Image 1 (cartoon, one colour):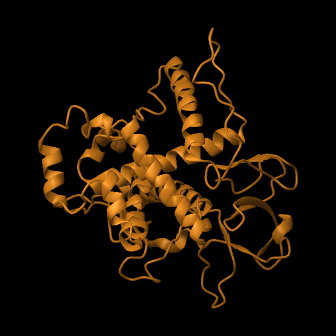
Image 2 (cartoon, rainbow, N blue to C red):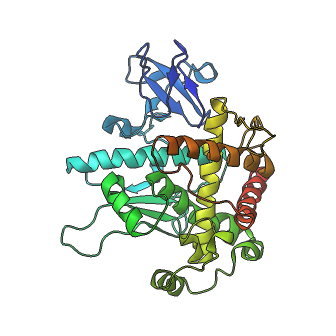
Image 3 (spheres, rainbow, N blue to C red):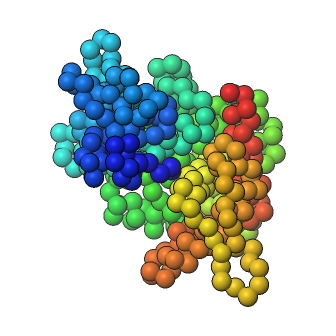
Length: 360
């Protein structure tokens, strides 16, 4: 994530801010420019951005701003209907807001989803909605479990439709599930990054003629998926699973291996952008030169950094932050091991994205 500042007073801003805490100007996010802008009212319920590149535009907040669930800006709807921003147009179902608890859950979900869309737009990846492509387009259903005690909602992906069980927005419930499933890491943003990996397997692999090259790295995805999952849950993982897989769940099926690796690549580039925006460099105080030293490549991890540059920056950063967490008595910030087998898969994801960017 980039750093942002108010154009009126230069106060630092965060991605989710709706107002500058210093000068109190309303602020909104411009997805086309990947920046936050201070706003001046037009007197007609619309806003002029202070951002120089679009200061003559007349914009409105997304309709979900009224629920404190979105701070993105968009153009007014010509038909007079509530205007919906780019990120919120992919919502097919949101929680029932008559339940006050669901409003807080939805807000947390939207924070994670908007960060996902920030990354997808920064990576210049193709995104088609369910309305543009009714069979394979992207859409989100945020669903609650039925009150009758029937089978709980499962988070998952089905040909572009991503379902998220809204109980995942409850921290205690998500932690309980993390422990039950034997996972190192479970977050709302992690769910979004994993499930969007399935969508991009369809778009960038299956539908783009890359099946064979992907299978050469991740294995044969033609094996029965349900049978593979059943086997995964009924049997212990291979003892050497860390040599080739970034997580235990990635061992279950090549589709899950791809999605887990995709999610980790998004974790990496997003975190590196934040670290470099803050000027973070790592120089351990050791007697000899350390492989954990890095100045950071100084490039854009989303668009220009090479895979080697990304890895050379990532490993020292995670080592340092894991050590900081341990000093506070916390769990590791990044509890994963990037073996040569895992790096090969991450390199495939990196090449896949760079090839897509080159095609425009």
